Image (cartoon, rainbow, N blue to C red):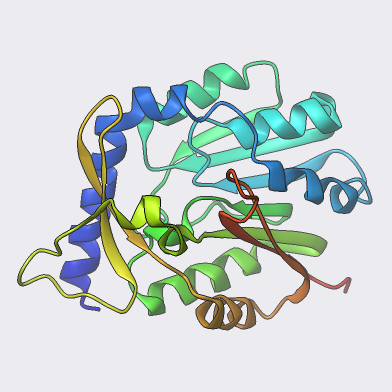
Length: 238
């Protein structure tokens, strides 16, 4: 996929979250069910846990960690490209040791340093280009500390009829790769977002690109418990 198309699709998604931020925040307050399966891994690590949440949105994963592990046991670093959602994250985590930055995973470098947990939830499907997705995972893996974890999800939206009904016509003249779609949004405001369906073969390829050890892959979330495909990876001790 060419750079002009990547920038155009990324701009479309940034506009989507600008348009839908208020309603997105109201409907994204509860933790994902799949997060509970991370806790046994995190409880093995010495506190405080240094956490990088890429695409943190309104900060609900940070809230989940603070509630389950104790606010004093985490050092949370949230980054997102949507300033409206970052503002809500700051409010939600006002009593947690936390910092926030407006960064675009496609355009800006990641924060420096190592983290015992690097999380990428609800982001992978918004990254245009198979090459860019692999590079993103390689960069995230480079920030995982020894014995630390990289945890990611792939949204399996295209497997469900209710999401396939939302697919919109692809614009003429705009490059497209396999499993690239535009989905509409009609709750609170009308908007369109770019989404890529990561199938099982691509998911395996992305995990291999990290160079980390894959500990577990499972499905969770949604009404049927299968909306997201999770993977938990670890960097071995030095």
